[in-house]
Length: 425
Image (cartoon, rainbow, N blue to C red; front, side, top):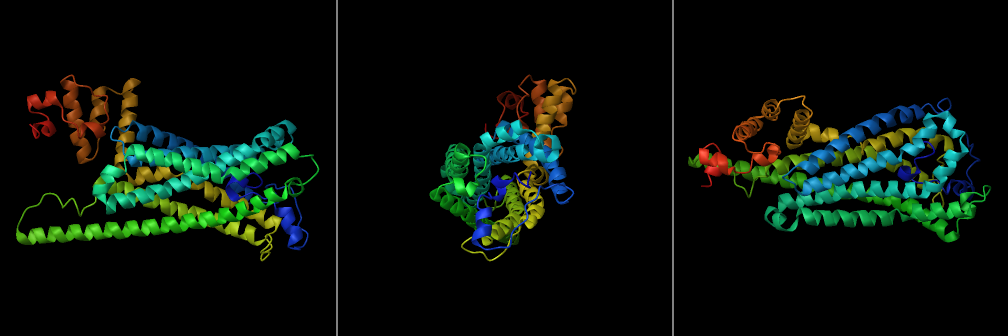
């Protein structure tokens, strides 16, 4: 897969033969890559199915949990977009994995003919999904920074609807940036005579576009690194400043002998917003780690081509490094679900609620068991108690605990059992 079929993620190699001649490198030996002559391909053959399972299972659960959350916010929009784009990246890599895993498929002319017919579209879609995922992470980081630094403007300007419009714009720009894969792929397919190389078939304009695209991929990746670094450093500074102000106010309050049950809202970061921000920062850190080998790989590829010709990146070295680089790169689009579960309590509670609701509907769990087990934290126990009371009084119980914790109930208020509604009477 990552050996010969990962061009969409690692860049294409349409200029390899031309570069070898123009740079006057020693003749490079081209060989058929197998696990015998390239042991690193085991990383690809074993790692991809694992990542495919984690990505599919985790991102589908993420989409269901985030889309069924009644208290939707811009965070839900961005994380759903990340999950969808990550699914596209992983599954579009399957067509290149199949011939690597099954030797018989390599001998099938029909399979490779079908792959060739859809190669341009597949590379364009894969690159679009990669750019969409990466730039969504950047937009989400910028949104979090504005939300924490300017909380009052955030409520009115950064709405769910506006977040959807922003994501549609990001998707459109990502598709335009990856358009070269679509144009070059189908131009080559239309003029392929079965003998000539790609560099002989493409026009000088397309060859120049291909060269610029390869260099731009390196530049864009580095730019995304720099932007994410700046945004996350600013996030850390703003959060630290807010925490210091909050601690200072608490100390002054204690010294004055005045009881203050809640910190100043203008100086403290809301817990829900803080947790989603920590998840975002961990996703950005994962992006840095997994993209680093890919950046080095692309830099060496560009350095081996005209007009630079500063490093001879041989075919053997490429085929040895590519499986490892590709698996590390794909892990960025596979394990975000694990970060959500480890760091985001609200996400865990929503998954738990959906699990018990599913068990209740299938008859594997009674309503009382599903309701009383829905929360394990102190806040979760409060929600479970409210839900049990609602079940006894005949009120709907098929509502997420995230909504029941913040919504007054008129029937329970009349009975004096709903503290939220009673406090508003």
